[in-house]
Length: 311
Image (cartoon, rainbow, N blue to C red; front, top):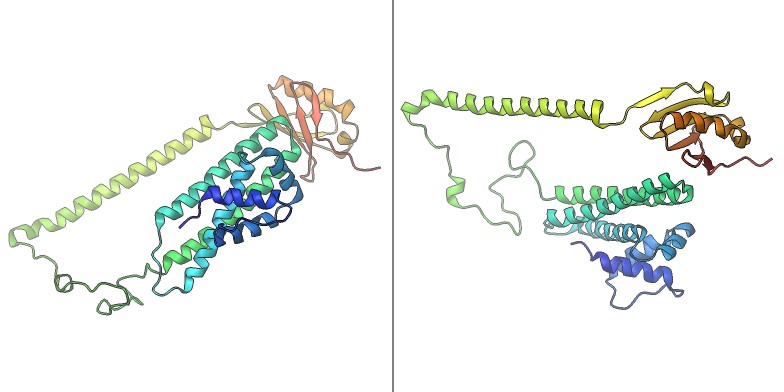
């Protein structure tokens, strides 16, 4: 069963804000163990961001979701050797997955806002938190899948259990179920049995073909109309140190050389004029090696996050 998310968040904030690193005596053991494990592994930047953002922030929700997932994973590992095997609660597992998905969605929204505002440090922090939440979710899903497979043994086929064997805790099947035989078909209906099977198969085939056609149509619409198209524009007007300019909607990806970064004050006006002519509002600068070089706010004509190498 999933642990309460509010208790996970309160325990984590108590550990981060308390100098003694202690929890109340009534804290459940599984929450205390997971809170100490997750909170103890946080980086100093994430700790400072949590203290500044407060308990209602997306960082606190992500931390609570990680603690809940870790507690569920530890409980699943403990139940591997339980006899009789435990019953897997799909609704409880779905609630945990939805909790993690909701926290990931809020993190993505904050990452998009950081990109729009040119907040490089915030973007790096949110990306690290989202990656940690994703790893904990994958570990939980692996544990849940293994725990679910302990009781889903096949009823027939090679390697299955003998239906006459009764395991501990299993209810014996009734005599009517053991002696059940296929119902006999009347002689006047035997000629229509094959027709009934053909009709059932035909409808399934038609439904499958219709679903495939609808999927292809939706994919084509998204590709040609819904998704923004990426257009490469000539970089000549932006200066000799601009290698490539790719425009997608109101955003652009610009590949520049290290010489452009070294004297970006002189190179920036040419690039801003080219981007404004294409209707671009913001652009991401990268070097030919793939390393990020900064962000350009086209509307204000400013460059953000430009890092020069030490001389």
